[in-house]
Image 1 (tube, one colour):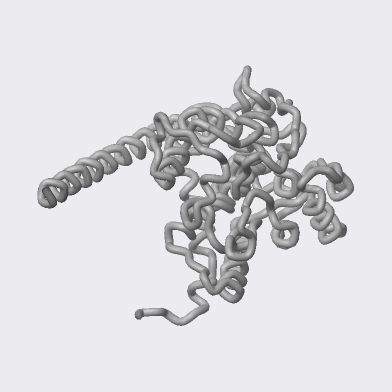
Image 2 (tube, helix red, strand yellow):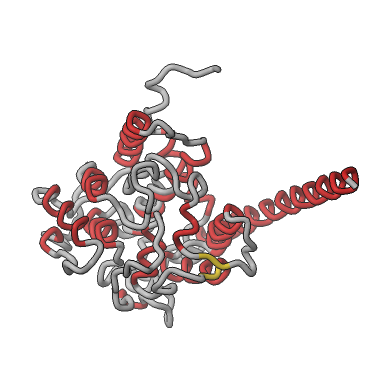
Length: 343
């Protein structure tokens, strides 16, 4: 009986491993083909990035409603913003992984390949099916799954168990770290004066950030070097203050990726890769624009009139995105400043 069970497990593991290898080979081939299409097609028109008939068309987003205490939220600002606008379920519960792929694509203009990869990764972290599984936003905050130590906007889980809201002090420090060139067109002279209602769970966060950044000119941009520097600072802080600090290379890249994505969503006019996962989102989807990122981070709200700064017809591919991710991650000096650990 034991031998039979062992053989079944080995067989299932082998089949699963082969399937995953074939799946990722197919996914990356698909992604490469989308990247090639982007090279030979015109950019989407400014003002027409969000597809017709989808939330956000023409920069008009569904009503923003802050979460209630019973609603589910997570450590990902992009998903929280979608729930706050009702693009996905406002309570953040019972969300389909497969349906999430489509809403991420129309909202932020990621490529179809990217939009399959990320929700499928979430599903596998939670040991659920991408095709049929469902989840609450808070579910994806399983430690060292997608949530990770040394986040730019959340305290480590050992200090902040519930990761659904950002930390005002960390958000302010991030905003003040921008050193990129000013925007050619002034859009928001003083977003610090626009606070959410006192009933909003974001009020205290936004008030703290507004006071800490009252002299900050938000009409400027982030660079990949800014992101690398701030990620390095957060990793040093987390190591010093968290006795359970842990980050694998994969988590470091995922952390970089999130922020590169956000910066690209809010970029000035067209996408220019800048590199590393969590933070890399800020460099791509937001194009590094501090004026848009300010609102997005303090209230987890999509600014009025905003659209993704990724204008490629097929969206932001895994290939293009990872050029930015690796540039950000390889620019972080935190590891090279400490002695090698061989044991």
